[in-house]
Image (cartoon, rainbow, N blue to C red; front, side, top):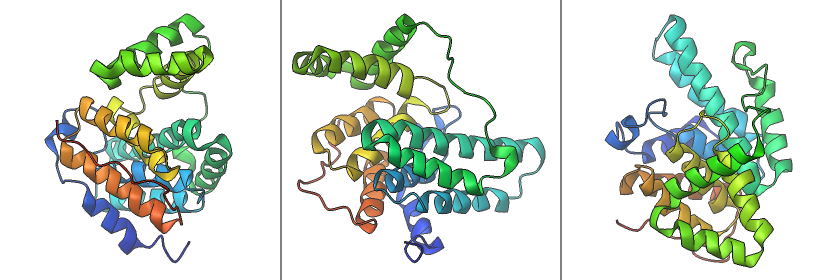
Length: 247
């Protein structure tokens, strides 16, 4: 895998995402180009944890090469580190926590001391009802007109599934911090779902990326980055990976 995760391969992934996309700029705190988030999650979900530190190191070197100095530079680096960690953590709900654990341990081994976390970012004292409320709020923001239909499908399959997805998934996991914007969480979800061959859900969340403000070209780029990473990691799909549908 070390032979695969080359600077040239990572630069190719970066080039797939539209440059200076206006919809990305509309989300404060977003990565201007979210390729490191998408690639790190796709590698983690594809069970290649050793590639995650390489993605981070490449993106960090790019930031440092820009010449920004002082607190502004440190903040850029903290944002990058946090977003990759948070994206990989969130993806564990879809690809399995063992893969997330291995990826985050590997990432921590190369993480500069000043960019490591020293305390939990989630509010561990929040009442469960708050996670219920936040989960429903985020779920509806992502799914919009299809929210009732999807929630009804989950509830009818198993009421505990519907509760779990809403409260644990969207309330605690995806909406538990403000590290990722709504559209960035959707990008991480898409990257993980592509890697685990879940076409129904890939289709849902490509649409949700559009709901969160991504352009069709941005959503297609995220899909393509995830596909290239997963394919390089040896993932084989039983079904076609859905395309982005024009709004």
